[in-house]
Length: 382
Ligand SMILES: Cc1ncc(COP(=O)(O)O)c(C=O)c1O
Image (cartoon, rainbow, N blue to C red; front, side):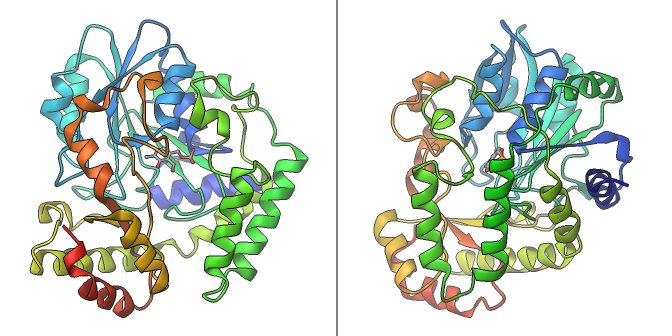
């Protein structure tokens, strides 16, 4: 059995689906692009998505010549509601993208019902949500297709990597056909990925974390390591040359290994997420609708702060690994988003949340230092 087959088998067992419904890619965004293409999304079509996402999501839509149509999020779920989505459906809508945000999803069943009623495809962006559930069903198993990411900070990591689950079986032969054109990752890319995976496994310790984080950010800004996104993906809507790329053997092997630990990791994230939410609620700070909590595993926990720069600096001084994801409606692009057909003034909730958000870690063994830090900096939280 090849490494990729072994990985697909492990993934299918974890999701409790047939192996033939799982496909693997160099990155999650490539899985999304493939699903959209298999659905026939192209010029003249519209795809509905939340106005609070990663820029590579509208990129995949625009590379196919289609138009992204954004929907504002609800502040207490970080997701777009079914009614807000319904108001954006037009005769041109071909697909609705539901997003699992930091592990949270909301009204998935209602949105899928809406899509079916209107004869529109649905895709769930589960890049943050592998291993979580919505109403007792695994994230990703509700929609026609779902894609997952195994990039550095995701529920499990293969360095970078993407997975596509295809529930709608009519799409499977089309995807198999499309996959014949997948490029093989270059020797250089695979070598750099191997070095980074080695560094993460053997060099990333508590004492070296901050130094290596800064080094990685510098090297990826200079384009010297395989970062999450290339400069071209962040600055333009033009598809990079080697975009449609398959999974490498090194990723597949790492994935099989990482999946062995995922249950324990998810349990910890779920418990820590609840601890943080309880602390936030007890202290009258921004917290999530508790109806959402039981099933979810939190990749990060969102908190809102008065001054993000100062808060992140204070966290760094206390050696708390605080995240700064989604500081723009189309992370990580700042400023004018008109290139992606997003006019920020139309999405006040996404704008407000992205101006104030920081992401708390949920994978710590000891939550004491984080809770102490929150207690000391309580007045900085909203
Ligand atoms: C919400 C969201 N969707 C899609 C992606 C793309 O995943 P990948 O980096 O594996 O392409 C990301 C990346 O982090 C993301 O945050």
